[in-house]
Structures are given as structure tokens and as C-alpha cells.
Image (cartoon, rainbow, N blue to C red; front, side):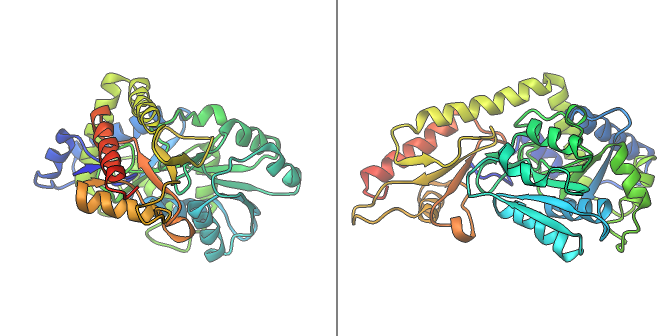
Length: 363
């Protein structure tokens, strides 16, 4: 099986080997040292200021999204949410659940955020800004320079979901004035799912300390306090944290730029090889993490090919996973990931499968 999904993704053999080992007891000086090193490297790879902190939450990226909203914002805030897909809608839903006043900047599927989308909200008393820098459902990568300038002018707390763009695209937390950035283990970190990481700058830390969160598990004050000694308040995903340490060390050894270049080359190679296939790339603002595609071909019966049907055929008949969509995009858009332990040769295998489907009248 070749895995072109966007998460979980294909993992290196060294990472899988750690997952096969016995999980050790973790309330030890040795594990604390590993956790402090994990924090150092996460700050380094997100371009965080020196006084930033990283916390490690056992839960998916959605858990980190909810923790960010709960710890940064209250009913006294007014938050802007960029909603250009299912994950932007998820931020809005979290705000609704926790009764955080918010307004949504609604974008058409596949469209990037523009200055004119932000203009109506200038000087209108908003206090926070939530964005999925890469809207994974549609593949759109938003312009962080544009967002950064807007948030600085309006003195907004800026919280960014970088779950699918972290490591795939450059990210400069300090340069952009990002107050909190979050990511997950199963995307470009290429680890098993179940771990999310939040990196908090000084303003976010101050907000966390002054916010009375009505939750035991999601109160980030406890994570910050325990993190001072390299621990977490509750039992963490110990095995995944050990895999994280190995993965971050591997990236540090070859350099962050080299890892980003590898993913970018994988994406460029794929995009160059699909030019003669019946697909349209649905966005002109792309992350290196994935390519969103709309099928334009017809099958041998003259019917437009469903995106989800392409996913099913590849999975069942070719041993290849791509990433389907849900909801309104289920039949019109699928995604091909470029993160994880993939190679240009894997791209060739996917292209060959599609060409065989063409010969069979399935594409």
C-alpha cells in the first residue's frame, strides 16, 4: 500500500520501529529531558521567540483547536474566523460551543483570502483572529503576511492552525506576530495520530494565565506548569512523544530547509506529471503539503467520474490511498498528499494507476 493521504501518512522505518517497542514509564528524569528537547525543537521549527513555550496535548488537532479557543478567548472577546472550508467551519463551531462571540469571513471553496475580505473588519473592535493557515479540505494556503499585518494594525490575538502546513511550508511565528500556533502528529511530522502540539508566545501565555477555563483536561495552565519540569499533567501518548523526539532530531540533523525542500520537490514532481490527466487543480494558492484535484473526465458510460469513486478504485484495486473529502466536496474534490515518507517513484506508481484506469474506461 502506498499512502498519499494527508494524515495519517507514510512513516519512516525508524519511526515505526520505535512504535513497536515497549512503552516506558515516563515520570523520570530521562523522559523529562526528552520532553524539554521536544519543546526546544518545536520552538525552533516554528520560528518562535525565545520566551515562547510548547505544550504537548494527547488528542488530535481538533483537541488543540478547542484548547486554543478555550484558553485564549471568553465571552468578553470578539473573534474573526476565516471559514474557507470544513476546518475553518470547525473553528467557528468551537467558538459557538464555548459562547465566544465571533464573526466568520466566508470564502468560496478553493479561494484565497484577500485584502478586500479583511477591509470591512478594520477598527471594528475585534480582539482575536482564528485561521487554518492551510485549509486542508480545499488545499488553500492563506497569505500569512496579509493576516499578520491586519492583526498587528488591529491589535488582535492571532491563533493559527498549522496542522497540515507545518514542515511543508515556511512558518515564522515571531516574524508574523503569531500568538499561538498548533499542529498535529499525523501530518508532515509523519507519526501516528493522537498527539497535538501548541506553541504559545508571551501574549498567549499571559491570556492562558488569566483565563478561568472550565475544564480539567484542556486547562493549558497545568501544561505550562508541568512543562517546566518536562512533564505533562496527565498521562501523555508516551510512545508517540518518543517517536516525535526521533523525528525532530532527524530533521535537525539534515536541516529544516532541507525537509521543506524535499516536500516541495515531491509536490512539484507530482504536479508536473498530471498535466495530461483529466484533473483540474482547484486552487491557485497551494501548500506543498497536498494537491487538491477536481476530476474532469468521463467513464466508458459517459458519466462524470466521481472523486470518491476514484478514491475507492485506487484503494481496492491498486493498493493506493489518496485522500477523499466529505460533505459537499465528496464527489467533486479529492486530495493527493506530498508529506510523509513518499518519493517521486511513488508518484510514478500513482500516475501509472490512473493511466491504467483510463485504458479501462474508468477515468
